[in-house]
Image (tube, rainbow, N blue to C red; front, side, top):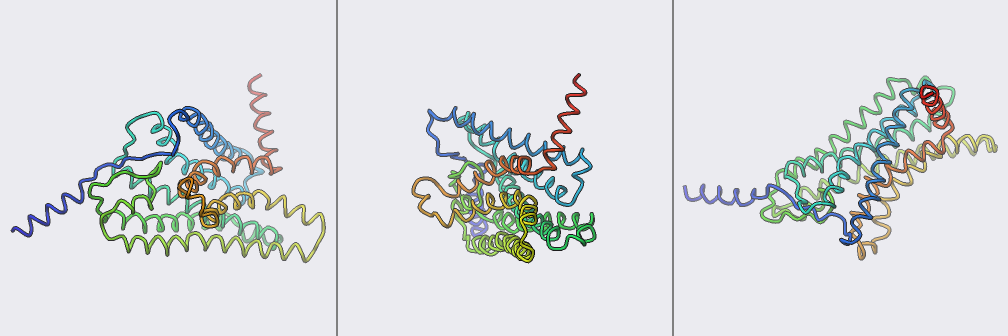
Length: 321
């Protein structure tokens, strides 16, 4: 009976953490208002810009193609990814209560991982779409049918869900004792693992194996796709062909550069950690900067999106008169 009571007491002590304190961004108090305004503007731009892309693709029949179908899902993912953490971050900048419940923290971490992974898989799917469009133009409509597009999106969602669960479920088995201060502006997996008083070897193994697969597999697919695209262009080296390929792939390549630039920057520039936590920089790039820039990249560099935007404004002007 004594051993049972002792075990019960230990379990009670280990599960004592019911909420976490988020330290937030390393911003000086006198700069809070300025950064709050900046981040709020960036978040609103992200939401409105991506919702506008979804609306344009929905309304304009010319945009009912595989590429724009995948783009609409990418836009939805970007809105979701930003909305998971940025509103909470903005609220914490103007309140002294920066706590988040245990359940809320785990949920926030899960959806951050889910939508980050989903972004990666959707970008890889779009690379495959560009590969088929340029390397097999005569069979494009046959290969990239509606069923294929739905399958690519479904696989992206399933893999993202499985990856996120593989991190979240082992985390829920950990004990956090008394340490509850998260050195981040949201519930980041790495920051939470540092707080645990349990053995995190399994969690770190999952982070390494699953993380490497989720990052490298889509990136390799993108490299292979653009390798074939480059080889196809070089076979018929004409100015017209190169310009067409650039107009077709330019926007997507810009998004790929933004997304994977943040990842590789974390490892290529380790000295940044002397000034600011590089994990915070990467997360901020994922959740604020990249989702905000994507609508501009696809609207300003894409002729079809410009036409659809012009039609929408023409309709709005006509009905307002």
